[in-house]
Image (cartoon, rainbow, N blue to C red; front, side):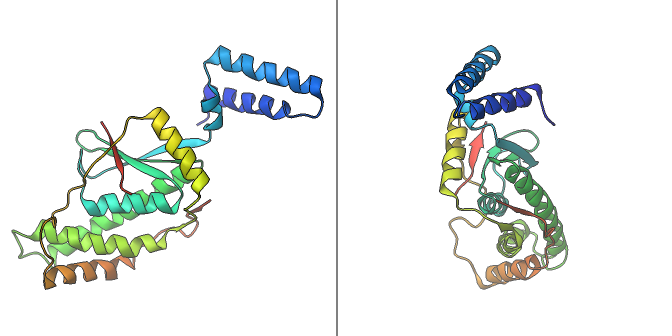
Length: 228
């Protein structure tokens, strides 16, 4: 939805474009108008330069420390679409916020929503079938299953990540707009050596993850952070 501020930013950008005119008189008038609008509406040069960067939020699975497989899904998708992602803590569940130039942030959020729903369904089914008798290790092993699922499913994401200039702009935007800190996702395998059955869970997840479904139209030009 276009806001009044968005409309004003567009007007300012048009004035700044006219300020590059070869006609010095027209250029000077356009530049003065742009500066006047910026002062009147409290819009900075930084706001204008980064006006195309958007924030798109998707529901997380925990308030502050989602499992590592979920964080991996969010991070891999953000990387694929030349976005960044951070966790906004909240109760009962936080939000993954994808940040990038429009429409990349929106597409990344959509891809996460779709794959996250499928991952949770696959996890529940695996717990009810392959892990139904594993009362003490069920949750941990289901996490391992999901790690494999995410590795395979994110291969479906047809993104164009890796643009250094875009990443630099996003980093500047985040530094200007948010006070972020790194966080450690919940890793239920931390400090233990994986056993043969753990690798079996990982492999089962990978095989099922290859059957994940994502709209083929989803395409767009390291560790997540935490807000709150």
